[in-house]
Length: 429
Image 1: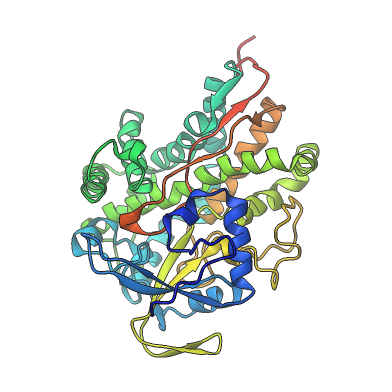
Image 2 (image 1 turned 60 degrees about the vertical axis):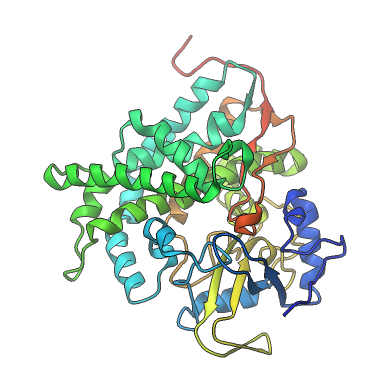
């Protein structure tokens, strides 16, 4: 397979240049491709981390959902977050259940799910609100800030650290490590380091931190999620000590990225659709639920996951072979007019909204979707109430997509300047 399928703009999906343009331009290219192809063939060259590979880009909603629902035919265990099969050294740190298949996936998710329940998450609402308020207190007198640094990045990660029982003294360590994993292709993040070595070092840092905390919680349990995970047992199944560190990486990286990116992109999008901002701000109670899901649909923070055919299969009327790789592009599927009325329109009251921003249906649907929705709702509620005229004054500065790793895994935003009328912190007269 050598054919390159270029969009009308002249860019092909596998080229870095495709991903350096504004969101609207990328989505316009996907829209044009989607009307002609259910799956778009592409290729990725050899790198120092492995041989080149061919793949199929899945850009329609129906095929993405079909693949997601059938893990027995389309597996995750050969590397779900990269185009190439991941080397064993990387899987050691990044092999949590997002990159597993049954029965191991089902066992881990069952044990984790027994601790990571909606009831437990419901108890976090007060603390989530308090963390958000604390961060807005730190920015509210300034009148202009980088929203990513002031709120979007620290907010969901502080929630996760508090939930896991990680002390605030370790927060910067966790933040720096997750920034490297999320932005391993960006020169500003890497600062001259080798990308693969930097990722492994960041992974080792997070695993070491969690192993130390888990050992403490085994000996002295508390009421945090780490204690619940190390002591959780379902039908005689427990997490092995070496499985907890990779789960924490998944939680600290994937578990905070949707909220982090959606907060920044949501503010940017609302700046472009002021009528929708007014609708939401005038009825926060009634609109927040649908508005949050519309931000996730429209921005689609997670760019892709990859699946691999376990046998010869038919998809969209075409035959594919065992070992074929399929790259699920969530943002493209979330603009499919076969599912969404006027999909290029941002509508804070959109209903129904069958978006796949938290992953397609099936066993790998995001375990933290409930928490992410709560965080986003609280963040925008507090911003609207405390800084009612907050608005972006710059375009989003995206993470650089990078050659060694193919497409960006997340459409991360490094910087977004916002302005607002300064106010006093809560509790200060």
